[in-house]
Image (tube, rainbow, N blue to C red; front, top):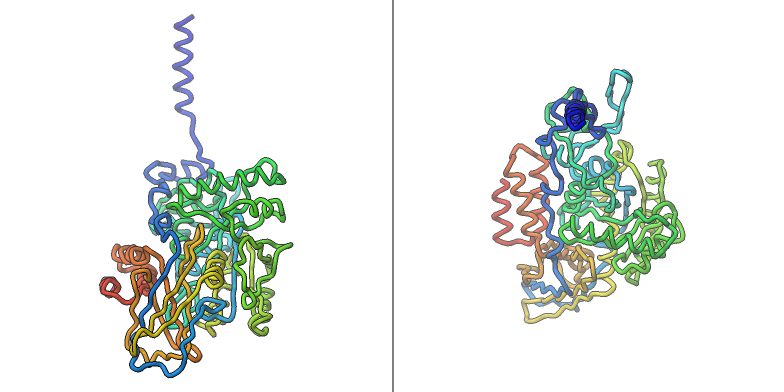
Length: 500
C-alpha cells in the first residue's frame, strides 16, 4: 500500500510539473517568449527616485529676502500675496479619477514632453480572434527602458505657462489612488525589441506606485477615492479605511500623506467621513459642494468640497474656459474638470489650453493640482509679508508661511509695489529660500519664492538622469526645467554647466 502511495505521489508531481502555466496578466508564455521570466520583471517600488517628502520642512517657515537698490524708494512700499500664484487671472483644475493608467502614459506624459500612449486601437490578432484590436498603454518601467508600444505618439513639447518672469511652469493635475488594492504593487513585464505580441502593453487595472512616484516628482497631486469598505454607507468604516490607505501611502511615498478626497460614485458618505478624518483638508465633488471663485476666496477653504464637472465633449470645456476668461475678475470661477480615462482628444485639449492660455498663448492660466492651490490659498490667507527699509539701499521682505499637516508646496508669489526691477542692484535670500525669480509687475515687482527644503537635490537628480543619456532631449528639458527653479547660486551655476 505504501509503495503504491509513493508511486502515485511521484506520478502526480511529474504530471503537475509538466502542466503549462499561463500568466493571465501578460498572455500565453509561448506567444510571449521571455515575457514571464523573472529577469524581465521590474519591481516598481525598488526602482524609482522620489522627492524626500518625509524630510520636508516641519513647522512654519519664515523667509528673508534682501533687495539691494540703487536709490531709496520715493514712495511707500507695500507687499502682499495675489489671489493666484504668478498673478494669473484664470485658474484651471483637473482631477483624474479611478487611478487610471492613462493618467501616467497620456495625461502626465503629454504635459511633460514624453511619448504619449495612442488611444487609437492597434491590431493585436490571435488565432481565435484574427481581427482583434486593443488600445496600448505603457508603464514607467517601459519608458525607462525604451520599451514602448509600436504606435506610441512621439514626444514633442511640454505644456504649461510661465511664472511671470519667463520661467516655465508645467501644468499639473490630481490623480486618485487605490492604495488598498494589491495591483498597485504589480510587477511590470519589460522586453525591449520583442514584437511577437504586445500583451505587456495591454491596459492594467490601474497605476502602480512606480508611476505615482514619478508623477509626484513633477508636481502631480494625489487624492483618496474609493476605499475597500464592505459598507460604503458607513461613515466609521470609511474613516477606518482612510487610515489603512493612508498608512500604505506613507509607506510607499517616502512619508508623504494624502490630504485630498475626490468623492466617488456620488456617495456623500465619503464626504461625511472626510470631514471627520483629520488628514483630509480639501475635497472635490460633482454636487452639493461650493463653486470656487478664487478672487473672492478670503478663507482657507479648509474642509471645503469644491464642485467640479465631468464633460466628455471637449468643445464644451473650451467654451467654459473662454467664458470664465472673459468674465469680470470677481465673478470668474475656477474651471474645475473631472475625468476618468483620457485619450487622444483629451491630449489635444491640453495642447489647446497651452496654445491659447498657456506659455504659447496669452499666458493667463495657472493650472496646478488642487492640493497645491489649497496650500497657496492657505498661505495667502493665514501667512503674512512684512516689508521694511533697513538702510538707504536695502529693503528686507520677511515672508511667514504657516505650514499645516501634509503640506508639500511651500511656494508663493509676493507683489511689492513702489519698486521696479530697474531700481534693483541685487536680490539675496536666507537659507529658507531655495528658489527665486522676480520681474516687473504693474506698479512694482513680483517675486516667486520657493521654500522646498530639497529643491537643489531634486534638480540634481534630473541632471544626473540627463548625464546617463545625453541624447535624450526630454531628459535635458527636465534637467533645465528643475535647475531653473533654483535661486541663483554657485550650485545652480555648476548644475547648469553639467547640462551644457
